[in-house]
Image (tube, rainbow, N blue to C red; front, side, top):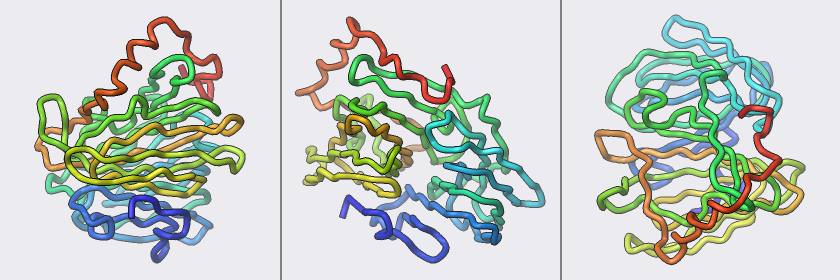
Length: 279
C-alpha cells in the first residue's frame, strides 16, 4: 500500500510510524509524535534521525547533551531549528506540540547536533502555478549525515509541486536510487492530492486525496504532481535514503513532461511566497 491515511500508520507512542521493515524496504523511515507534556523515550537503534518540530517546541536529551528546540507555530511559519540523533543512542523528548523524526538506516556514527532555523536554506522553485518553497534542512551539501536526506515543501493553494513528475529508482547516470516518504499537512483542514505512477522499475498507480497526517510511500515510480487545492496551502515533508555511499537526490523527469521546466522562464514567481516571511 502506498497511501496511508492518518491513523493507519500509528504504532505505540507514534501517530505515524514508518520503519524500513514496516514499509517493506531497506532505508527510509519516519515517525511523528504529538507531545503532551509526558516525556517520550526511545532508542535510535540502527537509524539516524532528526527531531523536527512541526508545531510547538520541545527539549531533546541525547548522549548527555540537551537541545532546546524553539520550533514554530505551524509548518507554514517558515523553517524550524532541529536536532540530529545518531545511531545507537537513547533519546528523551519533552514539551508540547507535534514533532517529526525523519530517519534512515545507517552505519556511520556522527555526533548529535543542533541547527538553528537561521541556517536552514530556503529555496523558491518553479514559477507561476508551479511556484513552491523548499526548506533544504537535511539536503546533501547542506547537512552532513550518513544516509538520511529530508526537505520540506510548501505549496500555495491552487499550485502544483513535485512537478514535472520525476523518479529516482534506477541506477542511471544522473539518477539516484531512493526510497521516499511523503508526509502531508494541509492548512485549514482542506484536501490535497498526490500522484504516483509506474516506471520501468515497477507497477504502481496511486492518486490519493491527502489531508493532515497522511503519508504516501514511494518505493519506485514517477511521483508528482503534488496538488494544493485552491484555498488550501499544502505542506509535505520528504524523507529519502538509498544504497549509494554518497548522498544524492538526483532525479529523472518523466520525458513526456520535462518540457514544463522551460515554460517557467517567462513566468513570475507566485507573490504569495515566501511563507513565513523567509526569503
